[in-house]
Image (cartoon, rainbow, N blue to C red):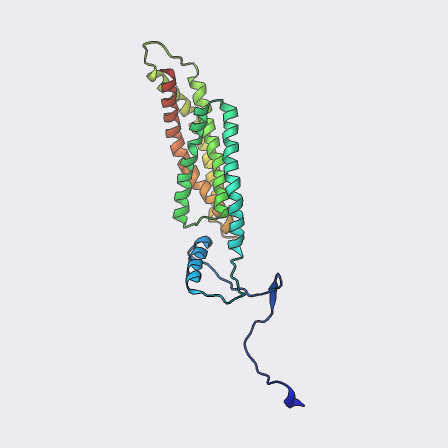
Length: 246
């Protein structure tokens, strides 16, 4: 009879039962704003570890973009050192002098300064896209340093040490000549990169959030690499050559 049927009532509950690895699973979706995902998850983990007591058989796992970020960061910890190692090997094969390799690599921190400044100005947080942008920036910054050092070497190769004669003046003139010859090519390279990427930074279409974070380190890094490379690299080259010729 109808009385034998259990009492029926309407109550709120999940619209569907989901399972992973033969275990019931529930999802909580979070929209993060004003903070990067990694920092948010670290703060949330601290709060949950302190205030949340899970019953036996329950587990908590962070997924979604944070999971993808962790995987990408693990790959970047391998890709970035490998990229730098390849750059060093190629530079040494080209110059055959460790001093020139170190001088060219000096453009990397100069470029990183501008990239970090622009990220701070645009309020961009560290992400996989930003890491890709810095890797691309490293290649272009090294190219600028290579161009400068090659021409400095070519203008200074005729200078030879002379006993009891100070050659600093002639060496300085040669360095200035080589640096001035490279101003136009370096400017063309830097401005081409910066002007070409400005629409990417200011874009608002589909995928612009990712592309703007790739382009931002390159635009900021090119600006600082331009100024510092034209000043620091010739100065470092002059000091190195003067020490060798003494």
